[in-house]
Image (cartoon, rainbow, N blue to C red; front, side):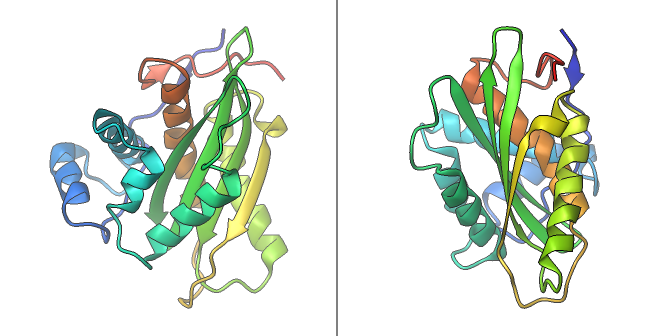
Length: 211
């Protein structure tokens, strides 16, 4: 089995959302509150808070961000496109993560399963608000490259994962795209595995490295 280590210094969920939950989480981060330090840690803690409150992780996040905000819009779009409101296929679990990097907001839903030898990632659904987009094909390729870069850091079968990219086009100027997608992959996978197994994956064998 290939040991896939989740990097706990993998990014930061940016400020600008609910001053309650996110502010408390940032206080808990302490010295790890750096621009590329805490996406995984923060998003896993959000899922654990939702689990402790017996809440759906998407709905829990929705309640922490303002209606109409860019964060809420990408979260709603990713959940809708992934079919979050309906049960996944037998043996498949879903995990969600969201965040902002360099002005681009992204929300991901990852689908994973146990294949007998280890975990397998089947699909990643991304909803992206990177501001105005001129060339959607080029922008989609950039997001997919970011997603694959994030997946290659976690699993060996990244090239076989289905990647769905959807747009929430805001009226802000165009922003960098790929890095936001890359940084959200680890948290989404970790939360999907948390739903699949009764343990939190922080430094864990996420998947059997099979093509």
